[in-house]
Image 1 (spheres, rainbow, N blue to C red):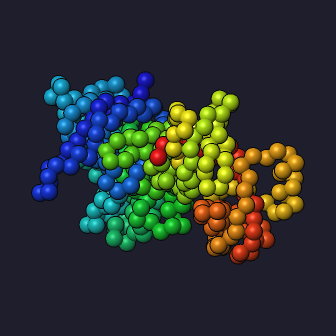
Image 2 (cartoon, rainbow, N blue to C red; image 1 turned 120 degrees about the vertical axis):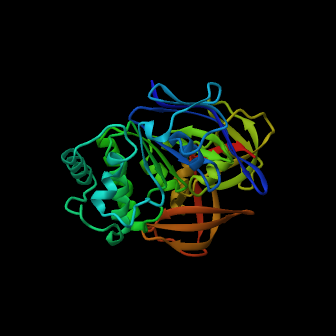
Image 3 (tube, rainbow, N blue to C red; image 1 turned 45 degrees about the horizontal axis):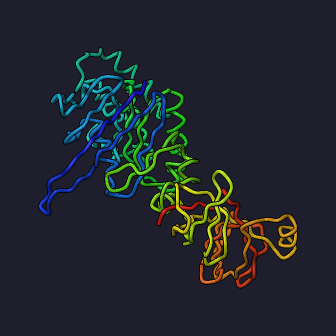
Length: 374
């Protein structure tokens, strides 16, 4: 049974410029112990969806169930308040009170907004345990303004975990950290959630963050969930051009579809770089115009000798071009290769001896060449 269920949730905001439909009938099932991410650009509705789950926003219609119990129903007029939903929340701004020390910030949920009364000894023990989980032992008396950004993020996480919630909600909690600390905390947060066997719903606009942390991802666009699936499926098999373009860098090449003999392969004729064998994201009719999505790292860069070997093996999807630009990125090279009238972005290992202006041969496997709708 799902720990969290959203059924046909809608939410509209009234502004001075008119009504804005933030959520358009989304449905969602999150299993117990799952790390689920809502991913999308600013304004797509992901934070609004999270706030509806938390009870900080009231939807216009639909139902929300938490652990099998209704916490919101428009048809039944039922709205369970925030403090009675078994959740913990980590906000983007952390919401750390500057006039309190670490202990007071973390202990706050046990002292307010709960029907159960805890003794001072119980509160101290629970705060000590929560701070140990986030590696802030010994900082109980530190004033909040004297904490680094990473430490404030840990305090917010400890405060959300102090009541051992059924569901943990995280709204872009790493967005205010520098790049190196953000990478460290990305793995630390996921590891902690998995060790505690918590169920988490995580909101972010950062594609790498979502891919690295999530069991499943829902990509949102204009208030709708346009594709839901495991990280690798979302990245390798995007459902449409929006998902392909939003999740990482992508080359788009227009072509005319022609059905092939395989189960998931087809010939795409009349592209600017020649006929390409590819996999299809959906059912297309013969002659229909499509767009091919190809990731920069999907290309293999060959030299003249490799080209002869590839030809002898009957390699498909092989074509030639000239390097127009070259960018060194440490462990990789980002190339822009002109093939006919197309300019393709290609990612190659930096250990390769490749020079600006060089004539190269490119190969892409059919499964890495994805036909999607225009």
